[in-house]
Image (cartoon, rainbow, N blue to C red; front, top):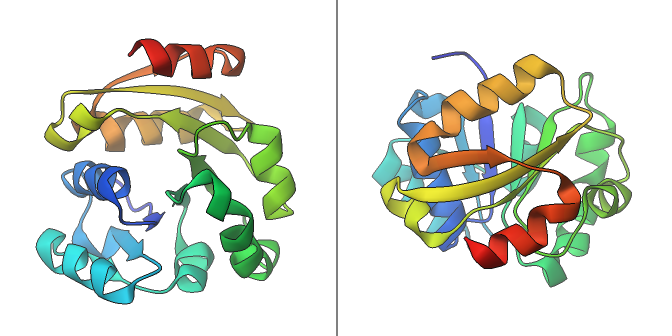
Length: 172
């Protein structure tokens, strides 16, 4: 589809489901997976024919960096990769699926003013029948279009205002 790299930090249920959806539209080397437990990332990489790596490597290489850790773990994880983000020649799109953490909070925790797509996926995404509520800030139109195209196998993507995302996720 394109040559962008989609990196996933966090290979839990939702991170794994979204990585699998992305892999349907990307080649194996374009999907990077990292997890607190390296073996979990390796198993998923084997299953998807993708690439396992550590958090810093994923942060250095991904054009779209999915932050799939629990909200209470986000600050520590972003601190771990902050230098990799700051040192990038070109910013990546941060894709946060952490409930309750706003775009401005993600940027503040990351220490960078990168484009952000905030998503609230639901569990049917694992079988391509989900609803991903999304909002974007600081993204170029082509970044949003690439995101939509690559993530289309997760289900319906619905872009809404960030002020509505928490209420919308409760409904969907």
